[in-house]
Length: 382
Image (tube, rainbow, N blue to C red; front, side, top):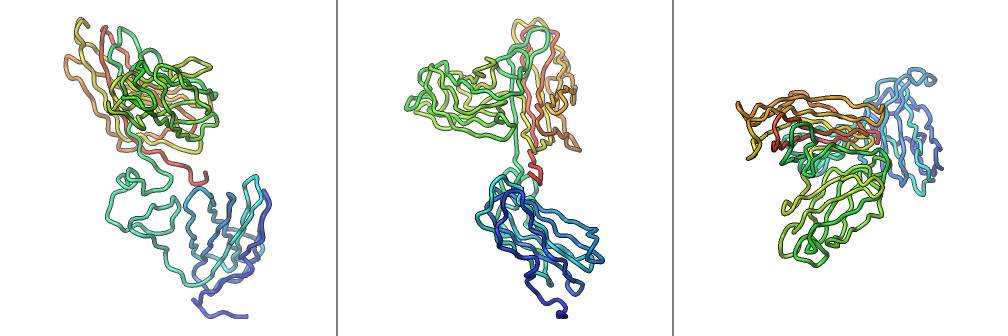
C-alpha cells in the first residue's frame, strides 16, 4: 500500500487504548514513514509513564530514540517529531506502581507544523512550541508561566554577631541541619498569634519533606501553646503569614523547631511577617541556580570599631555527604558596608543539597544581612 505524500494519517499500529499494568510496556509496530515529514504523539492516561519515538533504517535496528516523560501532575501537550529514518514506531511504558484505568495514545504521520500555545498560558517544560510572546524568561518564571520553574528570593539577617562565626539567621548561632525527617513544633511568644486573635491566625510553611520532595503546608496558630505538625520535614525554606487578625502581622516571634532534634528550623521575627533566614534546601529531582547575591554589614553601638567580615557560602550535599565552599567574600566596614555579586553564569546547586551562608567577624556586636536570588528548576524526567 502506498500513501500520498504529506497526507495526515492516524497510525493504528502505533496507537492504543489497551490498559497497561504497572511496569507494562506497549510496543508499536515499525512502519514505513518515508513519505511523511513528521510524527505527532498524543497521550492521556492516569498513571505516570515514559514514551519513546524510535527510528530505524531497516525496521530491525532502532538507532534513534527520542524520549518524553508523561507526568499526571503536569501539563502534557502532544509532541511532534521530525522523521529522520525510513521506519518509525512508538513505545510507551507505565512507570507507575499502579495499573492504568484508561489510556488513549494516538500517533499521527503527516505534514505537521510546530505546535502553538495561547499567549497567556503556562508553558510546559517540554512544549514543542516556539515562544514568540514579547516577554523575558525570568519574568515569566516569576509570574508562574513556566511549568517546572519557580523564582526564589531569599533574605536573612543576624543582628548581633560577636567575634567568631555565626549563620545568617535571626536566632544566631551555627547553622544546624539533619538529613532525616521529623515533625515540627510551632509556637509564638505572643498569645495574640492565635486562630481568631489580633496577631497571626495561620502560617504557611515551604520546604522539603522526609523524602526531599517539595512540601507546602498551612498551620493554624495557637499562641504560646506549641502546635505539632502531622507532617515530617527535613528542612524549611520559608515561613510566611497566611492569615492575620486586626494587627495585620505577627504579634510575637514565631519559631519552628524539630520535635526530635530540638533544632531551630525557621523563625518569623516579631512584626516581620516572613522568615529571615539565608539558607535553601534543594528538593529531590531539582536544581537551584543562584544568579545574584548581596551582603551588607554595620557597626553596632558598643562594638568597639569597624568590623571586617568574611562571608562564606557553603553547600552540604546529602548525596556524597560533603560540605563544599562555593562563595567567599569580604567587607571592611571602614571602607564600605555592602557588596553585590552578579553571576554571569548561574551557580548551580544540585538536588538534595543545602545552601547556607555564614559571617565571620573580628568585632563584637556586628550586624549583618544578606540576600540571594535564583530559580528552582525541576528535572524534565521528574
